[in-house]
Amino acid sequence: MQLSLPTTPSEIHLFYNTIQSLCNLYKVTTYIREEEKVHIKENEKFIRYDIEGSIEGLKDIESKIQKNTYQRFEIFGIYNPISIGINEINKFHHDLNQFEEYLHLTQTLDVYYAVPKVYKVHDRLVGIYAIGANIPSVIPKEPYIILNQIQGIHEWYVMVQEGKTIPYNDFINNVSNTNYYDANHVIITLNETQIDDLFTKYEVKI
Image (cartoon, rainbow, N blue to C red):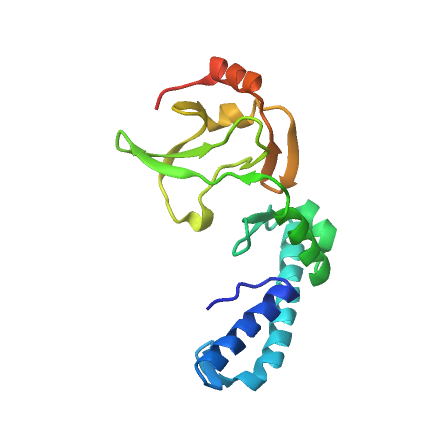
């Protein structure tokens, strides 16, 4: 099991509650934490450590973003990845409760979070985001693969109708009705007419 910091107080308590439940299930009182054997009675101490670590982590992110060391910071391990930028930092700074409220509000929006598929086409890797008509969809302003798990992608595309693709830059630079989601994502909702117009102007074969 792994707990990524910074995270929320609820997540931290849930993590150690799960450890407690597993220890009870297997009738043990010790487990390995960061290569050290520890007792379940120490869990409250570790909860405090991880809460403090999360606060320090947010302080570090806040400092680096304010100094432009980072343009944005990606947080993973939640329902959807979140790009933290100056707008997000100004909402919660390093307050874990406000951070938790922000994540909850963002993650519970009734939207489709588009995730790219990668294909090998004519000996080159291409990334494709697929979205549908009349569906509020979260897409990145700059396409990427989470944690760079796949590298060497030559081209990026968006597919809205089966078999019809648009170069990513042509798509993202010409869609209307976008709403802010986070530092690297917007929410778009396209109707059939808007989709047809984009395809007429920018459709390509891959």
